[in-house]
Image: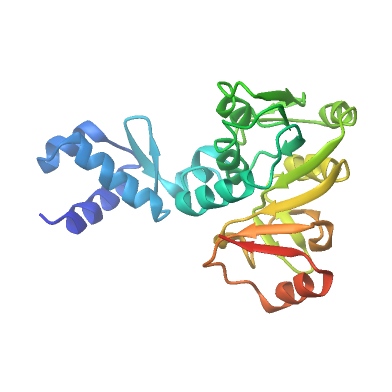
Length: 254
């Protein structure tokens, strides 16, 4: 069986059974577990399934707000955005990273920054920086949001008011006009809306799939941002492109 045929069969099994394991697939197809993991990684990169510990589940089974799902989608695009935006951050600054999977990709590229303070309500971002000796992580408190692996609530935002935040980096479910930047989680949108006001510079970090989409709740207008970082392949709606040009927002394609 060719690799493409095997992957199609794996996808069929995932959708029918609701879950598959690497060990079972390896035995059934007579290939190594390394090969099966490679197959699952390929299918996950195409947003066709979500990898789990030891196997995979259909993408449709995971809530859209789930970080477990979002962090596996558009991996290459988010990594390019993460590397590019890390270069915008100077040693000694205080920055905010939200709970988006793109912000998590950015956090992974801050390991060698010095005297950097990262404020966040994302437990995943904090974990990604746990071994970054030159980075101080400050967590905004609140109520645990399990899907987004974050802490939400007005108390956490009030705590952040103590800090002079140089730059804020915000992902989104969608970016459109006139809705602006939107999220599918109302509580996350509320936190982002308030933290935006605390940041002197605001940078949107959105992969190519976000353009033209609209989520449940708006948390920012396009005009609120000084820069937008996205992928080279992004197709930007004409009305959004006009707003970016008219307001002088820096558009960075990576």
